[in-house]
Every structure is written in structure tokens, then in C-alpha cells.
Length: 216
Image (cartoon, rainbow, N blue to C red; front, side):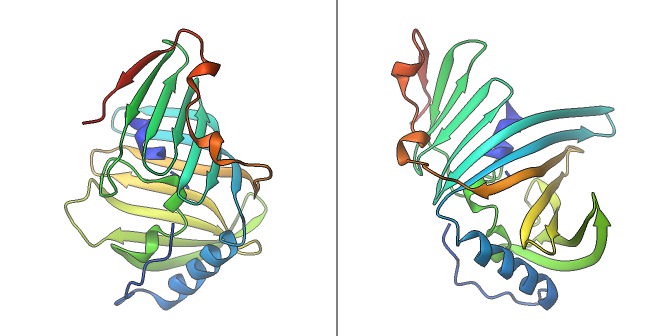
């Protein structure tokens, strides 16, 4: 289950934060991405999620879909659906027909809210522009983000940005326990006809579901 919390990924409001000693080129590129994505009323994306651990010889790949609107999101991946309406999170497990209800904390190190993925660089990171390269027939900017808080469970996040589209192509988080989490976006578009109701778990659509409320 832990890998689902890392998605909850890939994907809010701008923070009035000083960039300090950050690489000006990296800031310029990511500002363009953030501005471009904010022209969308909502976002729909299809992605490949990869969990790697070289020490344990683990590589786990899963396809998924995500819908984002403001601070809300819905993820559908590998028989698990995650709904978040901005305050409450529902995680539905198809195999056991149960849903867990939680209330994620903004400062939870175990998760990155996908709705904030385009703005995470604005607070708590030192940025470094690495290079420009061609990959999968597209020109990409590569940027590394290093957490200023050394107690974080990860040492680095690498972003690959589509130069021509000003869109995020890949997000990779390097955890200190040897796990690497990658989100590679295959399709990204402005979400049409996305309503707020999509981000709330509707018990009526899941007959016999067991509800487990884990909120304090």
C-alpha cells in the first residue's frame, strides 16, 4: 500500500516563496510549466508508475490514470481507486471490496499530493538545472530538486520537462531506503466535463463495500 501514498505523484496555489540560491534557468523553466498547467481548468493524464529497488532487485511497473482539479484528484491504478476532495481521502481496494477513509496531512513526508506536483519546487527545495537531452523523440530539460530539510525520507527528485510543450514528462523520487519512484506521463490533456463529484467516493456505486474510517 505504501506506493499508493507516494502518488497521493505525480500531480495548488502558488507560494510567495524566495528562491534563494536556486539555479535561475531551472526556476525559469519550471515557472513556465506551472503557468502553462494553470491555464487548464482540470487535468487528465495517463501514466506509467515504476517502483525500483536495485538492492532488492525489484522493478514493479503499473499503468494508471489521474484526474486533477484545483486541490482535488482521483487516481485509478491496479485495482485501487483513490479519491481526494481537498480534505478527505478514500482509498478503494477492488480485491477486498473495502474503502479506507483518511485525512492526509499537508506535511506528511510519506506522500506528495498530485495536485501540487507542478508547484512543489516553490517551497523546501534547492533547484539545479542539469542538462538538455533527447529522449523518446522529444527534447527534454532535466532538473534536480534537493530538499532543504535533510530529515526528509528522500534525497533528490528529478524532473524531465518537455521543452516544446512546457509540460512535465517524468518525475522520479530517490528515497534514502533504496526505493526509486517514477511517474512517466504518456498522455496529458485538459480534462473535460470533470465535476467535483468525481473526487468523492460514492458508496452507492460499490454494493456491499466495507467502510473503514481511519480518521481521528
